[in-house]
Every structure is written in C-alpha cells, then in structure tokens.
Length: 232
Ligand SMILES: [Ca+2]
Image (tube, rainbow, N blue to C red):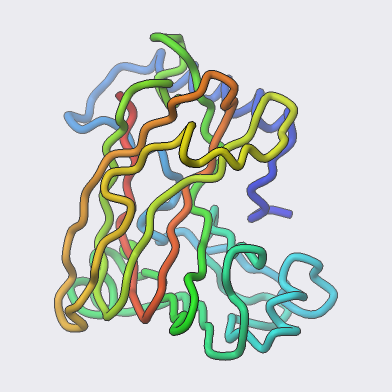
C-alpha cells in the first residue's frame, strides 16, 4: 500500500540510491533539504478507503471520522496508524484545504487531528535510514546526533513528536527510553486563530536502530503543517 510505512528492503535500497544521486547533485539551496517527504501536505493521493482496505478497516469499525470513498484525497506519504490511538468515534483525521495563513500555514493544504481523550498518531514521510558516523547518505539519520525538527500548529491540545524505530530485520524496537531522545517531547498548542512554530531535536542513541519513521501524535484538536526534519 502506498501509504504504509513498512516499506520493503527493495524500496529501502531504492531510497538509498535516490539519496546518493541527490547527494551527487550540485547544492543550490541554502537550507538543507527536509528529510520528510510531503511535510507540507501539498501532494495528495487518491486512496480507496472502505472496509475492503485492511489498513483503514479498524478505523472505520471504530467510527473514526476519516475521508472515505473509492478515491478519497489523502496526503501522500502520510499514514494514520490504527494501532497508535484512533480509539473511537470522537477521533477525526481531516485533510484540510484552505488559504495560507488561515486554514493552512503555507500552500493550500494541511491536516487536522481531533482526538479528545487519547493521543492519536500519524506517520509522516518515508522510512529514514539510520547510520553511524558520516556516510555517503546525507539524507540519513546519524546515531548520536540531535537532528532538528520543526512544525507549525494551531488549535487546542498537545502535539507529541517521536519516531518508530526498526532494526535491520524490519522488527519494531520499542526501547524508547534507551534509544530515542526527543527534546522537547511535546508542545502545548493553545491558539486556534494563529499558526505557531514549534521546534526541537530528535536523536537516535542505539546502533541497532536501522531505520525510523517520523511520528506526530495529537491529543486535543490541532491543525498541522510544514513539518520538517533536517539532516546534519
Ligand atoms: Ca501546507
């Protein structure tokens, strides 16, 4: 499935090749590239969202409010994780369209998560390789180095930043306290009318982490846009 974060090894190898090609290209931009594909949510994909779709079925069964239909517009490279929150009908994922500075921060699109009682999370971007030392892959996460992230949010609630970690065999690593340091781990959002920028760092501390995906959780009612994670 296009939005499933659990990519195959073949896809990972392709991503690595793309990163090498990118690294070989002349650098024209002053700012380092965002590691998160579609962090501004502008690129959309048409997804068939119904009970026949195994990824979305649990959400539909819990009456979570999500886009639906044979060609529902969803942000590319963004995945709602049914196993991370999204527990009941009070939860909602909305692919927002609107004006820059108003419904969205920049461009024409953003996302909004409503999850009043528990935290509900989405994955943003593709799998990111994790390397130790300075390698050829300039789009990899480096072990032991704090990587800067930033996001824009408006609404009322709490935004939590973390990642899911996987080893070389694509198995989940749940050792968050030992292997992951996010500072700060969460932000209080308290303005429905004004987009605010929130910033922090994410650091992988364990060499057995082979790749990660970037995760944002929301408790409350919060719009998100322009999510950025930077290489070193
Ligand atoms: Ca946007």
